[in-house]
Length: 311
Image (cartoon, rainbow, N blue to C red; front, side):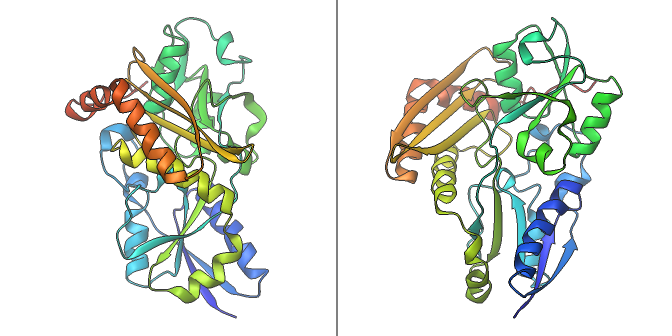
């Protein structure tokens, strides 16, 4: 049996994820330790994510520990992992996905549709901001950083009428008492990889890869490869207004995707089907680009991004 060291961020959700993986490995007879590593994204908490502009803001320092062999594997929320890994690393495992959708969280209102005009809604995601503004133009969208516990405390303190969070993260922490609505992917397209966990290892460490193989889920991996292929073809990171969600339906992969302007004035959506995950992702990206996604994204990249305002 092996002694394995997991690199993880220190938030309660990140540690839940690391302990979940550690539990599965310990059940196989391995000895497991968790090392907490503070990332750039953890250090910069007073700026909207879209304005930080650093790819790998939640993974870079953990990858450094991996490269230095201070840890043997890293557990990530997949939506935080850049589409292009450094050549010395690989995603050895993509675990079975939990709920990929976004959750409407509010102590007072039962749904997004019930919010009154000018209600304050918290999010730092341009993808969510874009779709919220398109669905409900009269809402006031405000920046909301911090871990899930912090965001919910701010909601309960009355700083927001509602906030939007990933359903999987809220569920993992048992903090779903204020979840009023799970928003369909057709209404609010999720981020690529949302709801799934990835385990990253050194590419040369075949021994660790073999020990982890039992956790890999083929259907989730195919779906994620499709979503990340679309994201890569659009040149996007995790903080641009791009959504992608793939799932297997009737023997084929079905992909829902969107690209939009941060102010919600333009939202392009595509629903496509295919067999090869990466080809489907790339071809769908080309359809979006042909419809004007290139112009929208160029505008996002060439100007200071209109991230949600601070409350």
